[in-house]
Length: 419
Ligand SMILES: NC(=O)c1ccc[n+]([C@@H]2O[C@H](COP(=O)([O-])OP(=O)(O)OC[C@H]3O[C@@H](n4cnc5c(N)ncnc54)[C@H](O)[C@@H]3O)[C@@H](O)[C@H]2O)c1
Ligand SMILES: O=c1ccn([C@@H]2O[C@H](COP(=O)(O)OP(=O)(O)O[C@H]3O[C@H](CO)[C@@H](O)[C@H](O)[C@H]3O)[C@@H](O)[C@H]2O)c(=O)[nH]1
Image (tube, rainbow, N blue to C red; front, side, top):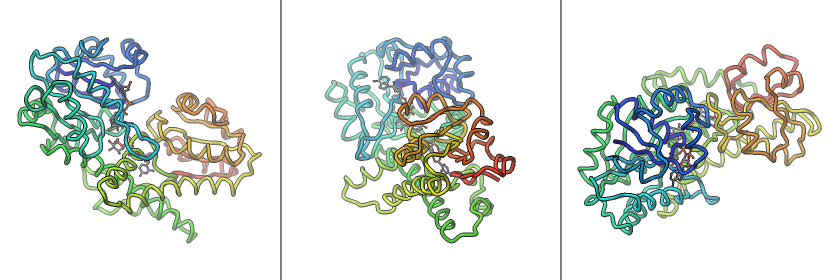
């Protein structure tokens, strides 16, 4: 049996993906009672393609919700911990939820059958060795002797989380001993993906390596787009389309031609936090990662640029139409989205009449950012009718042709996505 602790984006996807692919029974536990109740009724609190159907298929059968941690882990031989590791104000990661969950786990475990604890949350290098192992020891569990211990970072992308989990490019496992490796090999045997057995630090670092590269590529794209704007006369969208025709971008399974598009900055729950955490972790070891620092600065500059573009195009007493609030198309997640930063910068500059529409994220945005002076439109057409200047902040495909359809409006394309 499998247990999953923390049923957010990663935990729920992991639990349902494992139930589906392995055929094993998965017990899920989340500390949030409201979330447990919602899941027990077959609904999920965010949009993720195919996930609700997967919940419907496995709920109360292969996927069971536990009301307490003890029940979730009692019969499990693998316990995957998927709690959040958010950023602190200085960029370092908060390990409070993770260490809290692990200390609850060490109190909840009994000696009946050996188990593996697998940390899936993203953590800075040396967290397993310096924080997790000492914590388990202080709870009376010696990793490698009484209990197995693994770090198994997750690489899924929101918007295609389930597909990414079920068809991963690679699986990375750092473990305390051979037995833990063998349990993870067995767990992932039905998945057709290379499984890399490495040390804890390599597993931890590989996750930051991946997200830091993605953040660097986006900041590179944004730097070049801003440079092109300064030169003038350049069709940035077409330049990038032509760039992506280079065969080296196109080889499956990389699919990077769908990445490295310029825009008004990267946001979301992972790239900003993981880049900041990578910088903090590297600095803490005495090295100054100047390129990564610059990646973050370019990202701030990309957000500021669109704020300046808007200020140059429309006075604060005008109505601004805002299209797109979610951190990326295909998702209703608004955690760390650039729209929040951009709209709060506009509010600071005195803009008070902003009418926004997102195909999925209106409600989530309103509840997470209640102080922003925004009105919400139920339909795209209301924004078009209500504003002369319209700003695109998320590249939803339904926005692509609007500029051509409404040439009389003033368009500010924060995502270089309008044709
Ligand atoms: N969201 C992504 O796309 C993504 C992808 C790869 C890796 N990650 C990493 O995975 C981790 C989880 O991210 P997420 O987006 O799923 O976070 P999330 O905030 O959506 O979910 C975390 C869940 O853990 C629960 N929780 C917190 N403390 C708990 C405890 N003691 N016991 C039980 N449940 C507890 C919370 O109630 C919440 O539902 C993070 O480290 C993140 O960096 C996220
Ligand atoms: O070419 C691009 C690609 C993305 N973005 C922006 O970058 C942010 C993040 O996008 P993306 O990387 O697609 O989304 P996430 O779901 O946050 O996934 C990232 O973060 C996850 C959590 O760590 C990792 O597992 C994934 O591999 C990694 O892509 C969003 O604001 C996008 O709008 C761009 O501006 N240009």
